[in-house]
Amino acid sequence: MPVRSRTEIRKFDHLEIALREDVGFRSSNWLDEAHLIHRALPELDLEDVRLDLEFLGHRIRAPILIESMTGGTREASKLNVILARTAEKFGIPLGLGSQRAALESPNLARTFKVAREAAPSIPIFANMGIPQLRGEDGFEIASSVVEMVDADALCIHLNALQEAVQPEGEPEFSRGLEAIASIAKSLNVPVIAKETGCGISGDVAKSLEGAGVACIDIGGAGGTSWSAVECHRARRMGMRRRERIGLTFWDWGIPTGASLLEASNSTKLPLISSGGLRNGLDVAKSIALGASLGGFARKLLLAANAGPRRLEDVMETLLEELRIAMFLTGCKDIEELRRVPVVLSGRLLEWAKLRGIDPEKYSMRR
Ligand SMILES: Cc1cc2nc3c(=O)[nH]c(=O)nc-3n(C[C@H](O)[C@H](O)[C@H](O)COP(=O)(O)O)c2cc1C
Image 1 (cartoon, helix red, strand yellow):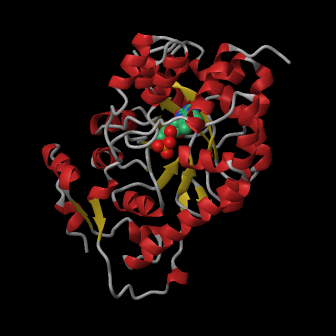
Image 2 (tube, helix red, strand yellow):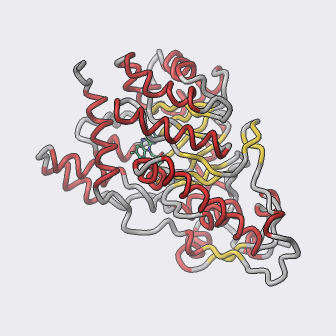
Image 3 (tube, rainbow, N blue to C red):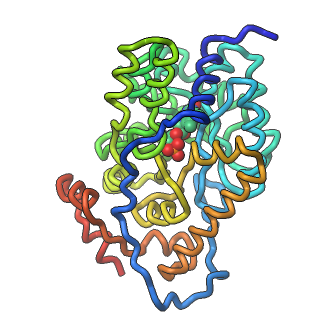
């Protein structure tokens, strides 16, 4: 057996902790504070509801993304095949996990390439973190990870919290925007800027648009907490101070519902809503609040780990829930869902008002 690199060991820990430990935010994604209005007379049949749409130049069959998660370990390879086959079957895009491990140990490239082999026709997103792309070789690295998996877009993940809390993290984000802009300008595929569970604020969304990214995945707070994941790792490593810090920042971030309001009021870019999405109704609410897609990470990882049939069952349920939410609001397609009225309440309403976002813009549609 070849010796595992430090990155590979870390990736293995992340996967194992995400599958076995409690790593969820204690607070919610705030989408419970966004209400779609029931239409007792939808004036359409449930079977007429259509979920397909255009996303970054691709026709996809439903507005759902399997978020960037795995690769870089032998164990992850098996999961990537299951996730990729399911994405192919459902005609939806798939994000891959950070490809850093494969750059360090080229033999691990297989653990990512298996996804393209299993899913020849769907959009696949390559993945790399901003700390690794800031150097002079940033563009070269970006191009090589895209080429490695024949990707249709590159996700650049912004994970400042995780890098700050992780025992061996690299919290080096200076000139990050400059690096994103230079990659976005020259790369032959679109760039997606992506948070990993702390959300994107309105001003950051605007800066990213100015830097030339094609899409933003808001990755808000309310689902998987990377501070929690690193807290568990630190505890296992006996690093008491790191564990303490991980506990302090467990719930840090902009809740997904609030981040979506921030981003959709600051940019016209397509948005992916993610971070603690639980079901198809959360996807419907996200689209009504301005997203193009809803992204799921840990929920689908747990399902994939239970096997392909379980994952397909979870996917079917998500699609059915989304279809029913559209039927009940009288929307025959995704375009109509984007224009449906939404009433904000509680903390989400308060957030909107305090941040200068007009809640009537949503509630008074039609
Ligand atoms: C096991 C695991 C590994 C992940 N690895 C990556 C990664 O390598 N790159 C990345 O951009 N995001 C990564 N993420 C973050 C997810 O893409 C997503 O932003 C985050 O988990 C929030 O979604 P959720 O609440 O649905 O889990 C990972 C998530 C999980 C659960």
